[in-house]
Image (cartoon, rainbow, N blue to C red):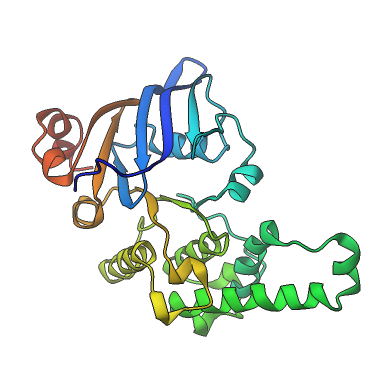
Length: 273
């Protein structure tokens, strides 16, 4: 899909990240545009997760810059990144395993709370009304992800595939402008992968009148960055693909262009990774 004319949401310029003598990212530049699903692929250790970690503030790059909607966020704190509109899921699931599904998703809403300590402590009037509004949004997300049967179950007792859905729900609850997904289908069977792929597409396109009172579902998220090893899924749902290898970006283009790129075939597609 041609991206000319689309607004650039995130601009990555000459990013470099090292751990001791290991260069996790080496002079990586990338434009992440609005109205697209951008897939980032590459062999294990190529730097894909490190790039996401730099985007939302978990890692601080030694060189380069990152701009989000024109604002420099190169070494931003993760909580500030979330408030600006960057939400993500993790390669290794990061949930509160002792809390229920509902509580895990509700926990993401704290960055959107507007009431002060005193009004929240009293729990009357505006604070109570605000919690009801947040709870309604969470209930809509639970309905959208088809996890009603596990809404009160402790997350630590859930199957792996369901925990992945809960983590996606928590990211959606932040109402992000950009959604970063780090291997959302890793370890899943075919049916579970198909479900997650469907959710990603539905999130991207928006659900319109189905969820009229929940903006993140009604309007969708118009910018999604997907790190994924399943090349079938990537080729099916991505508008554009960037390929990393040993911390360098070696190619970028549409799925058709990437599929026939000799350097990509040699570095990645030919490995069976």
